[in-house]
Image 1: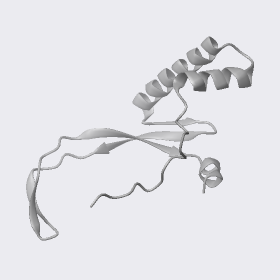
Image 2: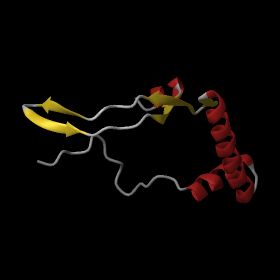
Image 3: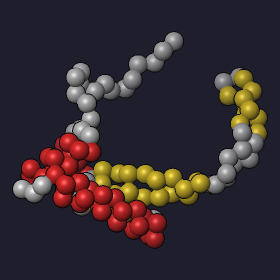
Image 4: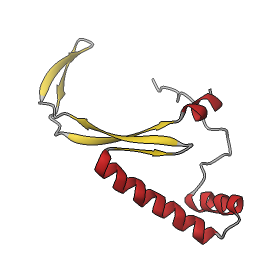
Length: 109
């Protein structure tokens, strides 16, 4: 039985591409698209560097990005809904998560 997705994107609407986002940013600020694209590139580099040092970075008015350490797990056999399932071992890893600001969450509630 196939499960339906929780929410569907409105038909015909596609997510904004990097170029389209840069163009919209350039139009809003009155600059060229190339300058806006460079701004986006530098913002990503700065966020990545800050995230590596502190583990947390906030993009004002948009979101907060955090890193989280997930512990290693051992291989085992678990009883799930009456069936025995083999769970493979996983090494420790760092997970990156983004959390929208409250105003953005409230806007699309």
